Length: 466
Image (cartoon, rainbow, N blue to C red):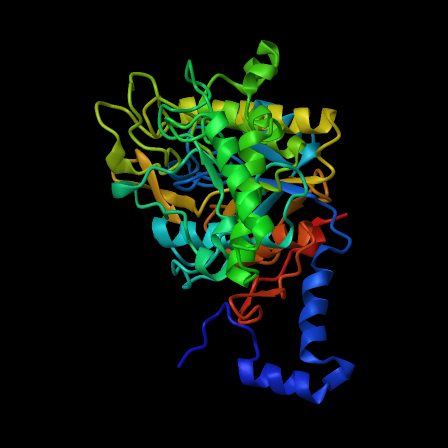
């Protein structure tokens, strides 16, 4: 029977025997304590913004142009020079081209899963290919567990829910049975209910409909009286519930969390710099949340309604298949999957975020990660109107958090099909790199018994860090 890839290299009995024997002078409790408490040592980053390009960004048409490929492969976008000598992006990213000294490109991202739902799950959980089970915790939940915030805000926030159903994106909820529902994210926004829409408000910290603030205070007073009389037991379950309730009370009654989500406190000029679209405004909100003390903010990279749309067709706008276009439209046009409208919004939002984080002194202690579940095929599909799924070589972007700026790690071949140099970086390695930046050792164990599962079986790409 094949061992579950996320399980410890030792089984439970072997670990108990190891602890009982005192191997290397460590009893089992001390061994587990050492692993847990060492997680946060020498962490260059305190927090992370994880921008998810759901659907799979075409690396060839964006951050890894192939000017030497045949004309029928390379696409219509010309490469342009950047602030880093010898490094090119395509002409659709002029602002990022000016800022390559602020980030690192990882051009050797590679794995073997070309299916959205499973590849996206392994990307978001940082687990190896082939383990996309619903019980694999996502990265944000593990960050919440091992690096919880000390501020009166959630540890993990997810900005904009991914559209489900026919678009086959993973639902959130994975692994919470193993680490506790207190580590689920606060989820904000869905479709047109987003901060680029007039009248948008975050209502998650309001009392339930029909319940006044006075009624909330009465309920809290009742809870305190039960605690003082000993009616509430000291069992672990009761203690866990009490901790969760206290946390919820602070969030509902305190001003810190609700202020962090309030974009009206930012100037119109700054909001315009990010872009008047969901991706731009969520990126600005992510910066506010990090500044308030949130540990990890997941941002679904949806640029908003395409020209002519009144309701979202899809949030996986980076899924640029031939079959999605008609009436002469292509992946390079203005449709719901079109690069002509999506690329400039990504270029603007990400450039504004990097500038804003740098100007506020937040970038050194905040890792910014931008990646999709895979890249796109070097060959066009059908009549040359789209590109298919391609996990064998693609590009991710990292900035801040101790990452070397101006670096390009690895490369793909001249057609963008396969890794040509550098270590192939899998989802597990990418996740392990995020954990490493945040001071969480990949070997750290968790689970109901506190040691059955490892945070990551990947190898962090330590060469990326200064």
